[in-house]
Amino acid sequence: MKGKFITFEGGEGTGKSTQIKLLEKYLQQKDKNVITTKEPGGTDVGAEIRKLLVCGDKDKFDAVAEALLYFADRHIHLTKKVWPALEAGTWVLSDRFADSTFAYQYYGYDKRVSREVLERLYQIAVGDFKPDLTIILDLEPEVGLARSFNKAKSMEVKELRFEGRELAFHQNLRRGFLEIAAAEPQRCVVLDADKTIEALHRDIVKIVNEKFGI
Ligand code: TMP
Image 1 (cartoon, rainbow, N blue to C red):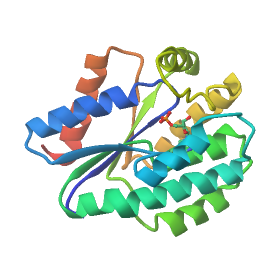
Image 2: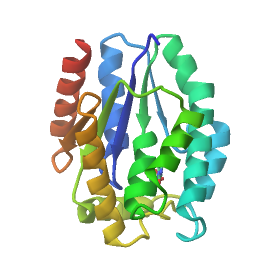
Image 3: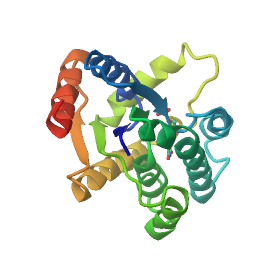
Image 4: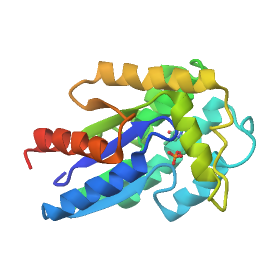
């Protein structure tokens, strides 16, 4: 693949979408072709799947059904959008990718779906492909949840299905992201997201420059 695939991960309200926009601008100034995208919902069909996943009652799916829907969205996203862009030499910045499934559906739910099942689904939907770089924004769940409830006040469709889960769920998934990063230090970087937007952007630019020699 000629382009680079950079994924942003973290719990609720960690500032991923703000940071993605800033990195997009930075890379464009460096004459890169860049697109930004997200999971779930990076394609038209994915947007339909997203509605099922992020709205409504928190107990409407179990963790297995959720994982299947996330991987369906991911497969469509990769084949229709991400892989063609990377082949064309475009840099792709994605707000969430497969680490979110391991963090939310495995660690968040206290391991109700086995790792083996998720790894099998990964093989089917994604194959051997992995991001070139994954930036994990780490934040106390209490701080992140307060930010995302605030943001939801101005949303037309309230995407609060996960925010409705108990604090322990969010603490588990934070631990999950940190374990994922520890297991794959060559791909993942954890950044403290409890700082100003500008300071966090500077940290991200430094990582991207170091990794890709821009
Ligand atoms: P977002 O709010 O960051 O756009 O993500 C939508 C929600 O979906 C968020 O609560 C995290 C959750 N999610 C999973 O549970 N598993 C996944 O694989 C992905 C991509 C997101």
